[in-house]
Image 1 (cartoon, rainbow, N blue to C red):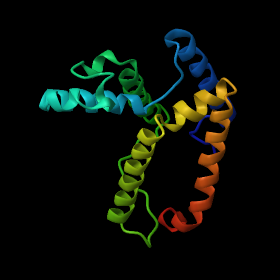
Image 2 (image 1 turned 30 degrees about the vertical axis):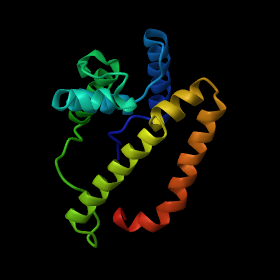
Image 3 (image 1 turned 60 degrees about the vertical axis):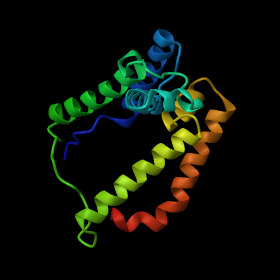
Image 4 (image 1 turned 135 degrees about the horizontal axis):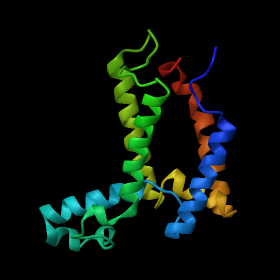
Length: 167
């Protein structure tokens, strides 16, 4: 049976080229959490400029359009690219995969909770896994290597408790 997925080694090679190009063109590594910060900053600044200007979290982008952040375009490119990949490989379906023992609502709520915790953790860590681990490891940063080890270690440690949501 032929797989509709790209060879993982080839995909990793292409990801390395994208990371290299990103560093060369923008002077920054890959990252995603900054785009969320840009949207949050712009939204709160529009609603209550005085409040946003008084918070250090928003000092980088208060009152500016999120479209001035290259990270926003990176995230839009990821979304469009994922959609096109699904279409080209004939893998695009609109269904929630879950085992028979888990209801669709529980599966979706756990995915939402996981995403929220991941986003909160990215803000606490001042960056997401792609920025801290992937880009950090690409430049042989000890912090990037330790971050990747911590991510995989923690995932392995908690996988046992949550595996029934996917099996």
